[in-house]
Length: 213
Length: 224
Image 1 (tube, chains in turn brown, yellow):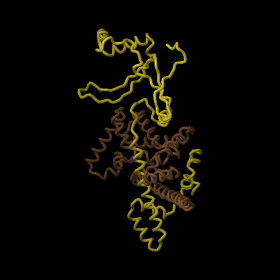
Image 2 (cartoon, helix red, strand yellow):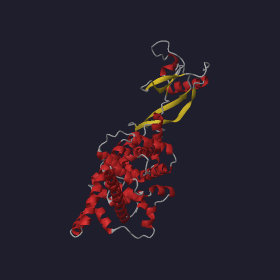
Image 3 (cartoon, helix red, strand yellow):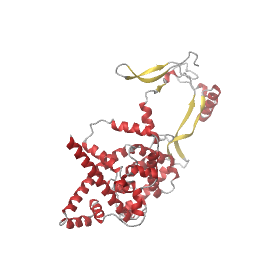
Image 4 (cartoon, chains in turn green, blue):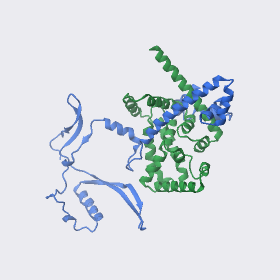
């Protein structure tokens, strides 16, 4: 996993978390970051690729939280990457880039949800189902978890994924979502409770299926 | 609670039904125990201590905490899976390419009617008479841009050139150290019309269904 401090969406020059580091280091880091954004905004393909690699993991979490069931996160990631290439020159402020990327990701997920292209979805589902059945239990378990997360409303799934998968603190999540920290705390608790209920339900179903065989 | 999970319905209605439960009256209905458990699994030492203290008289709370920790481990495994998927994604190579249609690319690849046009089948406008490239005909041009413009003009006259894709695709750029500006690496693409005597498509053949190029027959013999 990328270093959360280097890649999470809450990190920018104004992030109080950065003030905890040595002042000189923080200045160098923010300057390097600002230069990278500047190069990316200027159309430098290498810089755009670097910006993408630094951000794609938390963007995947946002997409997983907002994407409706049956939509492949990888397709949506490509949507967001394409938008970054096509429109990053419109970003004037380095600090706003991550907020912009989150909006792009959420919109991509919503557009996919509204898409009426049933054929495309069925093709993807077909491709998904036809994957070789040699994957280990851990990966199947991970996929099951992601599928269950897709059943949790995005309002709760997004902070849960940003905390558990990207290592963001409640304060950082509050910054990303632009809501009070207490709201994040409540949403995290609700999200975890929902996940527990879904997992419990799935375990009972599995136990019933195994017992019936 | 399951009503809150009807996420697809929420997409259709354009709002999240669970949002109302939280925000409409401003009252925090979330169970305080759940918030404590959530903080504890995230590593909050105070919350963990509180659960330990309460757990002495409430074993069910400890059991619940254990289950939430197991869920956290599942989330960590899912994170690795999601990270792997994220790491496979790169920004598109070409500026004009909209990878948002990645699914279409997959579907297109699945279609067997991929038409192959043999590069050798394209007759050059002016075949070289010897194996050595000749630049004799380019002697009248001061620059390569002049030569390219002359090509465009001539090709249009011959009906070979349909147009140029504009603007050119920027591959990379760098600032020049001597202050002259920027070096840009671009792709200029032209759309040409050519006559191909032969075309092939890939199709499954034989009992094994192996993919082989199959020649496409023109409908008439009068194809120009």
